[in-house]
Image 1: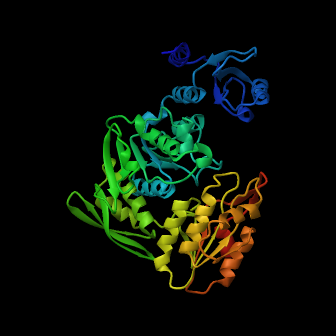
Image 2: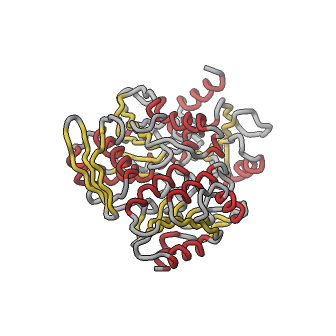
Image 3: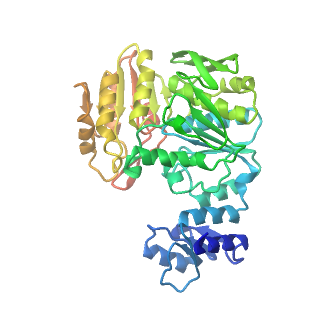
Length: 455
């Protein structure tokens, strides 16, 4: 153990200085008697602002030339997580903690779990993409431990765990009882740079699971199945043998039915959710409930009452709003709708600005291959030119069955007004989001609200 590690452990084990009343890594939230965490990207002006607002000690990886007590640590993110955990009295230990990671499916799976637990009279809280108002799927370690400390009237807590959160150690020290890996594909290469780095970040959720925990893995995803968690494992799948396996899948615009094979037993499952992609999400959720000792019969009955998740294949007549903003997610969503479409399949989508540019032509190729007509538009262009992003998407288009309309409202209007009753329209990319970000400014734009207004 290094000197810095010893200092951190002594700081925590001593109960921390009694005059520390608050923790913060954001100078805007600092109050009197705050321990302020200085990360690598923390600006000097923010450190000074924190001190002026009442920070009485800094946690930093290197000594700063400032007249204020400083706790010097090896890794500020790790220290922040461990200090926050101790400060809030190890709140995750009093809850059944369920963490859900994967490229797609996290949100729907987490909501399914919340619904099952709530339906079976087990108080549970959820946090994820829809619930957080910031652009972070997973809160930072201070916020997370504070939230958990306020949930002590609950029995369980399910949360989406993003690769960014795992890489930045936001869930370090959280005592997970169940960890789910939905699937793995291309995403976030603007941050992780390589697929191997991205997978390594995701796999961190499983590295420190206690022996009595349960890892739930997608048996149909070869990359996911390379994991070797240090605990018991349950698998789910459709195409490969699994503990929870779906067969005889029937999909319609009204929902999905399938048979669940488990331990030589067959259970019939009916759901309002549409498509094979949601069969995977349901299997993962049922596996989680089984790990909590819920009977499959009770869980399956509860699922029949689950309607939808906002912005996840959310249906408005012949229009579907979906968050699909990654190549694999867009492909799976279009493949779900294709056989259900009696007329033309129309797709409206764009790609985010200041994000992974490599996926733009890929998504153009996928959309024009699987849809009859594609309207390429904007999707949070941020500081990039919306038209330039659309043109990059168009470079990958496999057919000349697309148009470009960089104004998203006009693109959606164009799709609705040009469609026939038998057509299906997929508006992809933003899902539950209610704003569009352009040049660092947020403007109100809710795909579902716009569709209702235009109908």
